[in-house]
Image (cartoon, rainbow, N blue to C red; front, side, top):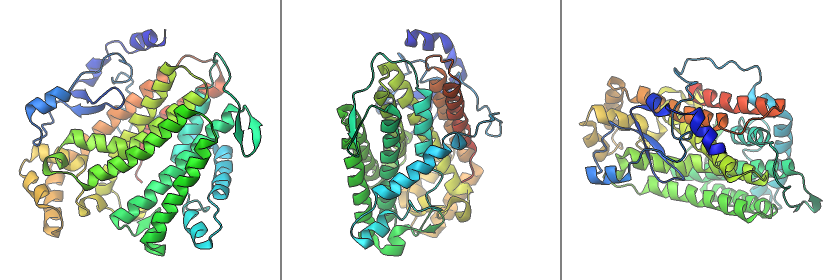
Amino acid sequence: MLFSRISKNLRGSFNSCRGFLSIGDHNHRFLIPHNFHSRGDSTHQVMRSLNFSNGLPALHSCRYLIHQQSSSVVEDEHDPFSLVADELSLLGNKLRAMVAAEVPKLASAAEYFFKMGVEGKRFRPTVLLLMATALNLPINEASAPIELGGDLTTDVRSRQQRIAEITEMIHVASLLHDDVLDDADTRRGIGSLNFVMGNKLAVLAGDFLLSRACVALASLKNTEVVSLLAKVVEHLVTGETMQMTTTSDQQCSMEYYMEKTYYKTASLISNSCKAIAILAGQTTEVAILAFEYGKNLGLAFQLIDDVLDFTGTSASLGKGSLSDIQHGIVTAPILFAMEEFPQLRAIVDEGFENPANIELALDYLGKSRGIQRTRELAVQHANLAAAAIDSLPDSDDEEVRKSRKALIDLTHRVITRTK
C-alpha cells in the first residue's frame, strides 16, 4: 500500500527533524521549534495543542534533506517554468479573455495585473500544471465529462488548466483587496491598483475576479472541487481578519502566526493541488500528498517573504520593504528575535507607529538569529514538500519524472529567492 511505502521510505526520519514539533489538526499542521516559548500562551494551552506527527510519517518529517543549506545547489536541467511555458502563455491569454467586462473602467481595473509585462511569474499556475503532469498516473476510471465553453469534453488536462486559471484569479483578487487594506502604493514594481484607480474600484475589481472564478469553478461540475476552492476564499477572509484583530498574546504567538499564514497563503495552493489530483481521479492518498506539497511549499514561500521584507529592497521586491512592521504586523523573524530578547515584547505591545520603535525592533532583530531561524523553518517546510513528491507512487513515464523533479526544484527556488 502507498502508506506502507511512505513509512518504509521515511523510516527514522524524525531523527533528522529534531527540535521541531508538529502543531495543529490533520489538515494543516505546522512545524514549531520545540524551544520556542510563546509568552502569550500558557503551558497547558501549548502542550494541549502539540502532537508529534503520526499516521502520515512521510508528510511530517524531514528525511528528504535536499536543502541542507540555503546556498546548496539543486542540479536540474529542466527549468520548471520552461516545462509549462506554452501552457502558461495560453493561460495568460485565457485569463485576459475571462476578465473582460462590459464597463470600460471595470475592465481596465480587472485586467490590471493580467496585462503582459506585469502578470508576474505565474508561480501558482506553474505549480499546478507541473502537479497535473506529476500525477499523470493510471486510474481506475475516467473522470465524468463536463461542459466547458459550451463544448462537451472529457479532457482531464483542460479541467486541470481551468483550476490553474481559477487559482490565479483568486490570488490576484486577494492581492487587490490586501492592497486596499494595507494602503499599499506599489505592487509588482508598478503602482498598485488602489493607488492608481482608488480603493472603491480596486475592491470592485477584486470582487469581479472572484465572481469570474466562481463561474469557471461551477463549470467543472465537481462538488468536491467546488467545496475545496470555496473553503479557500473563506480561509483568505479568515486569515486577513486574524491579522487585523489580533490580541497582544496572539500577536506574539508562533502557533497563531503559522495558522494565519496557512489561511492567507498556503491554503490556496494546497487545496488547488488537491483539486488537481481529484480531477485526475487519483486516490485519497495521492490527493493528500498533493495537498501536503502545496501546503508546505506555501508556508516556506511566506516565511521567505517575511525574511525578504527585512532584507530585500523595494526595487527587488516590487513593493515597499519593511512594509509588515510598518503596518504593525509581527512576523516570524521578530517572533524568533523576541525569544532571544524578551524585552522586545514590550516594544511589540507598544506598537510601531513611532519610528523609533521600528528602529529598536530592527536593532534587536539584527542582534538575534531571527532571520536565520526563519530561513531554517522555511527549509524544514521545503523539505516536507519535497518529501511529499518523493512519496508519490512510482512512475516510469519520463514526463512525469521531469515534472516531479521540477516540483522539487521549485522548493529550492522558493527558499533561495531574493525577490
